[in-house]
Image (cartoon, one colour):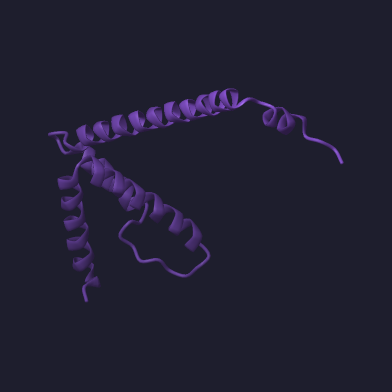
Length: 124
């Protein structure tokens, strides 16, 4: 039977050395998580600023992207359903970003979408 030299080396480490090795891995993972969290918070701050542009340009651009991703369309069972589902998931993820960045804008967009959906004859 062949032995794994790396595993054998780990088994031979003292408790202190093993703890030190694990602490280094844990510290590196914490640093990566902190960096990812800082990037997300920065992104949400930037998104909030864009959505609150006085001209309304940020919301109009977002609406165009969401409309292109068919956020309010029903899914049809056809050859393009997989692509539409992917677009819809992307649009919903962006709406979740909007909800985190600017909850008031999120509610306004949802109300707009609901009114448009009902106007198209989709109301129950």
